[in-house]
Image 1 (cartoon, rainbow, N blue to C red):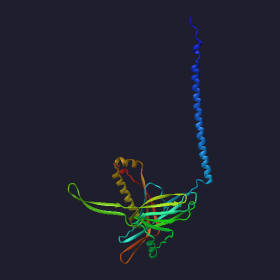
Image 2: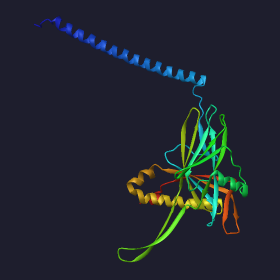
Image 3: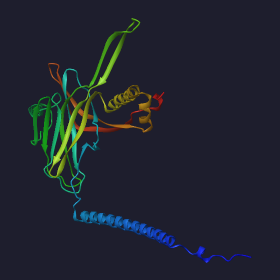
Image 4: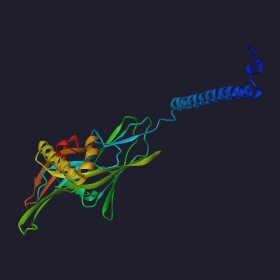
Length: 317
C-alpha cells in the first residue's frame, strides 16, 4: 500500500523564502545602482559639453597662438633642435653673413599683444648692431630695424625685437643676421695597428651652432624653439642638396654602428624619421684689394624641407 505524500515537503521553509527575497532585493539594488551611475555619468558629460559650448560661444577659448616658421616651413615644438643647413661659397679668407628668416604667425583666434622675439646665439656667430650698420652703410643693402636690441653676456649674444600686434592669421618676418663658415671639420692622422703596420685615419664631422628663439607676449607663456645652425659649402642649391644627402646617409650608417642590432631594430620597425631645413641664400661675393672677401645674403632665400629616415633595412644585418 502506497504511503501518502507529505505535503509539508513541498512547502518552502521561512528561511528559504527570506533568502530568495534577499537575492531579488540585491539584484534590483545592483541594477538601480548601475542605472544611477550611468545617469550621473551622462549628466556630467552633458554638463561638460554644455559648458564648453557656452565658453566657446562667449569666446573664452579664443586665445592667441604664436607659431614660428623658417620662411614657410613650420618649426614645431619638439624635444630636439631643428637643424638648419645654410649653403654658401664660404671663401677661405673672408666673412660670410647670412640671415635667419624667422616668421612669427598668429595661428590663434585673438590678437597677440606685447610680442617679443628674442634670439640667443653663440657669441662667435653673432652680428652686433655696429657691425651690421657699418656693413649696411658700405656694401650690404640691408635695412637695420630700430626695434632690434643687441647685448653680449659671456659666451652668448642676445637679440630682441619688439613686434607689433598680430591679428589672427597675420605674420611678421624678421631677418636675424649671423656669421657662418663651413661647419665641416676634416683631418687625417697616422696610427699604428696591433701588428705594427702604419695606416692613416680620416676624420670628418659637422659642427653646428645652437640657437634658441623665444616668443613671449601678453597672456602667453614663453615658447622656446631650438635651432642647430650648420654651414655647408656649395655653389648652388642642387649642390647643397647633394651634400646633405651624403650627410644623411652617413648619419644612418653611424646610427647602425652606435646602436647595435637590438637597439637599431625597434627604430627600424618604427620607421623613425628626422627633419632638416636647407637654406641657400642669394649671396653676393665682394673681394677687396687686400685679398679679403665678403659674402652676404642679398634677396630671397631658397628653402627646402627635408624629411629622411634614420635607419635602413640594408644595414640591419
